[in-house]
Image (cartoon, rainbow, N blue to C red; front, side):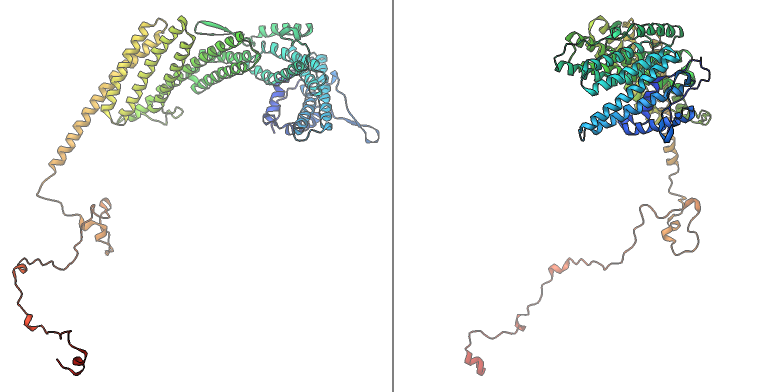
Length: 608
């Protein structure tokens, strides 16, 4: 069973990086909560606590008569981050026990189970309060203090929520945790945002349920938002944390807006903002990787980073769709979220096009090995370049089909946005579409050329040249296209012309070869000096022989088609003169029978 990574610090005055939210998220995801198995997670917490007690020396004592005496944890005992994980794991164990009882209540809603669940949540609240006091007394870094405060208010809000008798206090506690996490996300990198979003996904439904219960009870309330839910001490901690993060450069780029197609779209919804921040952090890493020469060092890693950026923007678009499904948004907010979703979709498509274009460039470089291998007498050695996979024209055809589909979708999105910027983007998409279609024709022609279908390949190279001409015309009309696109179209035109000439040369060489082969075959045709029949060398004719029936180089079983055997049969007589023979009259030789008119007496006495 994997354990959460521990940090050790022997010096008392040395800061201890608790990383509370990361520890909770990793432990929950790896030990059962990914499938809502709270019992498995509770068992893991119990075993982990036993290991922590032993390795930190925080074992409990036994009093008189064998009575258990719990050893309290004081600030002077916190010499290792694992000591702080003891109250954290204890709170997690109690919370998991309560959630396990809550799942059992769906089967049998017994009153004692609800009381047991509330007691377990109260115990989790006690341990969370102990953790927060130890973190404050130990004077850990500011981030650990803020995370412990958010965790404490989340546990307290969950406890009041399950009690069901004080919805206002539950809403206050949960709103405080939500606002603290929202502010914490502004000074976090994209790795820390994952853990923050994990806890926010548990807090937001609880806040909506509290608001529903208060509305149902007719209570007037106001949900605190932003800095209104934090006290002055917490706000000062955030200002200090912002200064620390600003000095180290670890802060993620502000994602208060999304820029697409020359326009800015504000991001006001909290979950969307977190998703956009994750995507912005990944984009920054990708730009750093590309600036450090990542294209040449590890191309597979570069493609994977592109995939992560595309997936991050897809998650942000999903968050916008989820926000649009809420019934509490106004018409203005709905229109704003719709425009934001369109902008995020456009940015996602642009990064998808960049990813596929980078993949096509890599595959085109690898295609050179495939083309060299096809050349007769080529000295290309695949083992020498074994780390690079050889690309085939079929793979590039599929890649450029995907690029054409992406550009078409982006053009439709630009048509929906409208305006001058939308028309400009549509013109750019039209030029790119012709460009990608020209590449598609080019690689389809290579497929036919490798299959020795020279006429079809020549026709497709010609179509590629026509599409290059159309793409070059559209690029000249557009003022936004860069010089790299023009140079790519020019290079593609030169290559298509060269390979079209190769097709003609190969076709002519194939014709000459066929003519030479036919001439050689005709020269061998002669009525004299015929080679002996090979029937006697067939295996079917030598079944009774103990010697080899033929040479190893000319082994044949039977002739194709096999020889027809002779079958003995009776002769067929056809006499045409039998028709003219007249048979003799033999009527006088026929014996006449007695008449049937004689009487019975005559027949008895023989009278005639």
